[in-house]
Amino acid sequence: MNPFAYLFQDWQANRGNVKARLVLFMFRLVNGINHYMLLKIIFFPYLMFYRFFVEWSLGIELPRKLRAGRNLIFYHGQGLVVNYKTIIGEGCTLRNGVTIGNKKLADGTLSNCPKIGNNVDIGANACIIGDITIGDNCSIGAGAVVVKSIPANSVAVGNPARVLEDKTTAVAG
Image 1 (tube, rainbow, N blue to C red):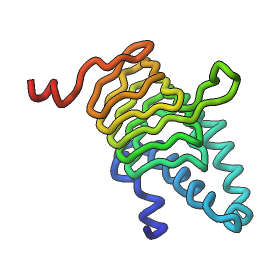
Image 2 (tube, one colour; image 1 turned 90 degrees about the vertical axis):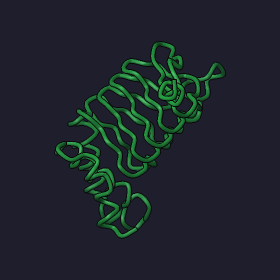
Image 3 (cartoon, helix red, strand yellow; image 1 turned 60 degrees about the horizontal axis):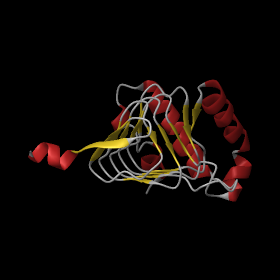
Image 4 (tube, helix red, strand yellow; image 1 turned 135 degrees about the vertical axis):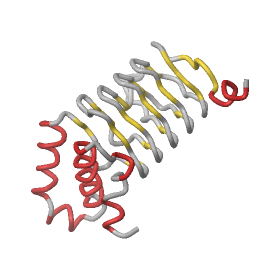
């Protein structure tokens, strides 16, 4: 992939959302720099600026080591926290207050982070934690606390989250 296309891969998905475009451009730049030690040394001031501006000033934690697919969308962004070991598929939407990361296990160790499929829509203030998988084409309701895997094409809501409906069955029925 050419560097220009890489930096702007989320641009169309966030049309009309200047803040998201700016933050995601900066995220893709810091994410690209992270792959090469020489670039990390040369662009160290930018890495610090990204951390200060995006993470501290805007309150949007998209770590430089995060693996996120194309066409990532976010609305508002405030309070958005994503652990760097999380894997996010293509075409996903994150809203304000979303937390995605690991959890502390009974033995005191930390679990792995969630794997989010493609085209997943995550509602405001949702919390997705633990070594779980969210299938493709899922919707996670606002305020949901997801601690178990959610199958593809599902709608999950509540605390703890439960599968409300299967989108394929709802359309067919």
